[in-house]
Picture 1 (spheres, helix red, strand yellow):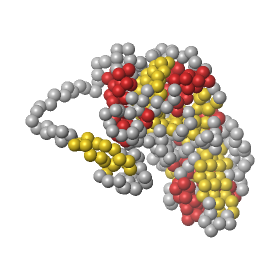
Picture 2 (cartoon, helix red, strand yellow; picture 1 turned 180 degrees about the vertical axis):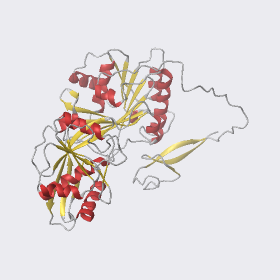
Picture 3 (cartoon, helix red, strand yellow; picture 1 turned 135 degrees about the horizontal axis):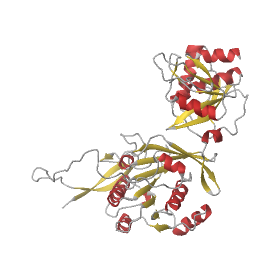
Picture 4 (cartoon, helix red, strand yellow; picture 1 turned 120 degrees about the vertical axis):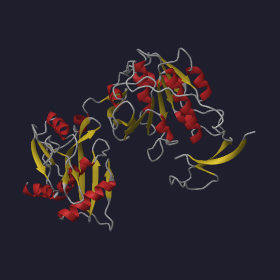
Length: 459
């Protein structure tokens, strides 16, 4: 007879311990250990029997690839790699109230015109979902609604010849398996429920959307293995103080990673933003010191955003370093290089850095734009209003070339910019990785951060 004994599982990373502790030894999280009942089974040896022989096939199959399904939301299709792949599983995470359910309900309504769609909610009643659909203008959409949290009931409803082509589970943390003795949302429940739903989606060939809660650190709650199990992981980002929302693909087996889709939250739901660069720069004011336009790349899409810096005298022994939308450690590095390599000491000043519009930048190509904004604010000399800046800064003060420079310059020229401050092109580079070959912009190439200070001194 199987022996039942308790075990203690970290709800953040899934590490298992034999006793309760206040701090998880694997991930360092506090108060994340919860007791779960586990069934210990004696493993059976595999040497006594023979397994079934696996059939191998070639990479070039004889069957045609399955066509992708268009959701009717261009930004969502872009992030997914051009549409939804039948039999795939997508995990959508984001802060509470950011718009995850709204986005998926709009996508379900768009898909329902051609495909059978089922929307299963474990957090809202059917009438609540209907109210949201009416507010979004999709009250007449042919979407099958249901409220359920039992995994057994959900599998029985979806496993049939008339199974829907698209299924939305909102959310995976509310679904529970009755054969696991733990509360819904725990590591064991999330892992087991997701595995069964994904297995059914692969076998029946329908697209499965799983909505996932996030922790206070912004990571999807539950075991990390959940992100490995699914085909695509989408994060819905945004600041409640801004109307913009960013849908970012951090994993995609059927498309490019780090691709983004930009939406605007309105009273009628989420509206697509076809030209994000123009929208992020719409409220920019020229001839203001500390403001610089950065030409960045988000996946395959060029993106122009405004970087704002403010350097002010500080009366504190430890001056403030406030950063919104960028890496704090990266800012500390740029400040150290300006001090040690260029002689611009800002250690006694408060430094505030902001990426306008609520967008978060992760690529190192923003180093030069941040440095230009800092020097501009410190010297009170504005950056030219028609200039874009990009480049990576090394610890010796050199400015390094970045990838896809021509794409960045083309986007800047399309929006009316006339100048670009870019890294000097390496001698071995004949393709213009540093920018400038055939560009309609006036290119200023620099090789060291000291050249940025000289630029503002001349102006």
